[in-house]
Amino acid sequence: MVHDLYILMITAGVVSLLFKLLKQPVVLGYIVAGVLVGPYLFGETFVDAENVEAWGNIGVLFVLFCIGLEFRLKNLISSGKVAAIGALTIILGMMVLGFGVGQYAELDMINSLFLAGMLCMSSTTIVMKAIDEAGLTKERFVKGATSILIVEDVVAVVLMVLLSSIAIKHQFEGAELIRKVGVLAITLAAWFICGILIIPTLLRKVRPYLNDETLIILALGLCLGMVLTAEEAGFSSALGAFVMGSILAETVESHRIEKLMTPLKNVFAAIFFVSVGMLINPSTLAEYWSSILLVCMVIIIGMILFGTLGCWWGGETMRDAMLTSFSFVQIGEFSFIIASLGTSLGVLHPAIYPIIVASSVVTTFLTPYIMKATVPCYNFFYNHASAKLRAKIDRREQLVAEAETVTQSEESHAFADKARHAVRNTFLTKRLVELFIKNMSAKDENKSETNDN
Image 1 (cartoon, rainbow, N blue to C red):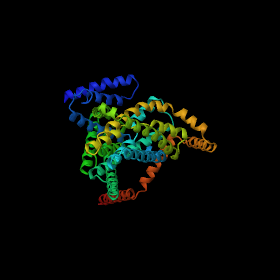
Image 2: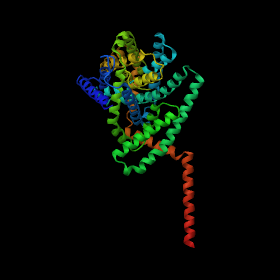
Image 3: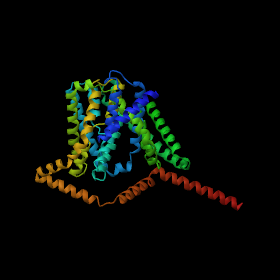
Image 4: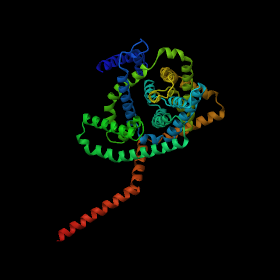
């Protein structure tokens, strides 16, 4: 096991360093490292595939746990219209395209659904890294893009649960699907209510005794506990990890936990991407090059089209909508996770996995160059648009600029006031306050009687 870990780490480290020097995403380096140590390139494997798969599965849990830690309900609500409309437009549009590609390739319904799920999610890691490296982190569109990615991550976790259910039964039942969604919604609501009522209070109570070591152990224990709970309830372990991350995101220690988890997440995420690369057979890629090209074209064109439309319908300016959609032109970690799920369930066609991984590599490589083309494409579109459409674009720009006059502090204050008002006016809170006052009054009366005696 130590030998396997040594081979993985040294190969991933050297290759990712080379990719860093070439100014390419390190994720691509991890995948290439997996190809190098895998069984296909040199005819033999240098590591135990079962050990790598086990570590990779742990990596998936940590990645989803950290994605949950980045989930901020307040931020999502503040850009709710763009997040909801943008994400749903992209997801539904890309799923229709993906399912159509699967049917065109004569895949069965289950494989077509899995392919649709793999193509509808952009990579949060790669998008944010590309935005940072392009120096666009202060741009106005980043807030909406981040919110859309959060919604996509949430939908992806739910989609994995639904795909698992469909794959196990090998058929699509509308009534069963509705029942499954209902059970999932009730379960999630129960988990969140119990978690948010108990865990933040617990952490506040023991905060003086929490050093970094104790906090990270406690956070991982809670994460793995929710993973086991999700599995016992018949859902995926990934769902449990994400839910616990989302619960801890609402605690006072969320940023500290996120900071402490980052090194651990990076190590196991690297192993996961290496395990993905180990499944790539270069000869298979050469055989399916036309399919890879088709999938890449569907991803790029579809993401730009549906991303621009969704963000525009959600209230963004045309420029911001295009900046968002041009940064979404790739697939990443969730596509691999869904592909791994299909493979583990034994329902995924053998050719789909390497095609998806190769498509992710190609689109990830192209993302920075496509992002650089956003402004020229926007100028070309604006200059060749009709006078009526240009007037709408200008009007939207004016409305968004006027809305920006509200400062972030005012927005935060308004949100806090609304939250406190909502809590104060809930029936449960009122009842608890009444009981507390009644109890205190009774104590005061008893105390007075004692003094009189």
